[in-house]
Image 1 (tube, helix red, strand yellow):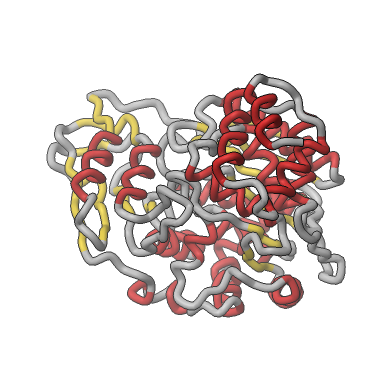
Image 2 (image 1 turned 60 degrees about the vertical axis):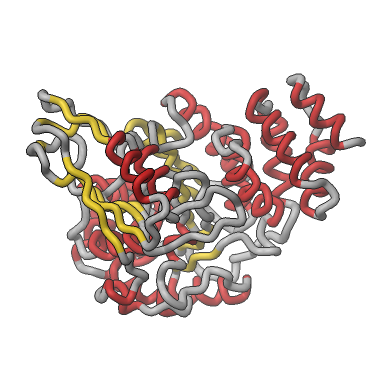
Length: 434
């Protein structure tokens, strides 16, 4: 079958057979199908969508492009957590250590930045020396020893998704529900997990702008997981403003440290605890969700989650002292403050504009070949609902090169809305699916 025929049929809204999708994925993984043809197919999927059968076939094809990671020799229930991506979303680096400190085994298969959303691997690699390219044997050994390990896609784990993941970022095809669902679930199903907790973001700083679309994505992923005998839950959470105060890789590691020491932002702490609680519950470490919440809260307050993260940093070759000595992390060389044009209340902070500004100064990728500057980013000084004075500092931009700082500053200024009346408080957790 010719690739161009499959592209045309999907462009015209036809359903492809599982073997046709398998042929596309196999051909692209073997470099027999070029980027430009796969880009056309991805765009056709964005426009026309996919049926449940097609999504299942795409997930299976990417899953079968590599090996399945058998974790049966690692004692304990295995649970992973995944976010669909947001601005300032570093909850994986908080929830996972808390769940592992409570007794769950947490094999974290993580990704890199897509568009203006940060990637867990990029944040971790801001830590000097830390390796995320563990071999499968190293991954297993670390899980057995520490109950937590972070790894990215390898040639063994869903390599087809690894290639498609980067291509989507560079071709404007990130937002497709079908592509997001199959990408996430192919990685998760490649590993011997018992349970998966999903955080599906919705709002200005998320790929899903409407709650109805976020619900569809959550339902699709939960259904794929359950068909494959995984215990599943998904939270739909607000991403209209950045999560926490820090946006940018090393800056977010600093905020992770503060949060694991119970000194982090309220919204980030609350969501991380809820995700950790559901991980603990689905791993059957606690018999009820309420007891799981007590366990997660306890691991935060007694510092065991913080110590677990430092332990894992060291196990993966990083310097755990960065959690106490922020000067050991990459640090920016320049800073610019953004001021409020008037007194009033912050009624909105457009997370997408903050994320795009961060990409402009090097915190994210414009193309799949781009490298990331781990030192740069944005630190908010206020959140929605807070009162500001005229000339008060709204945020600070941290940079290492001045080429695009003016452009980034304009984006950041446009992100803030100042109103005379205090806005209603936003709900952070909007729905639970599964």
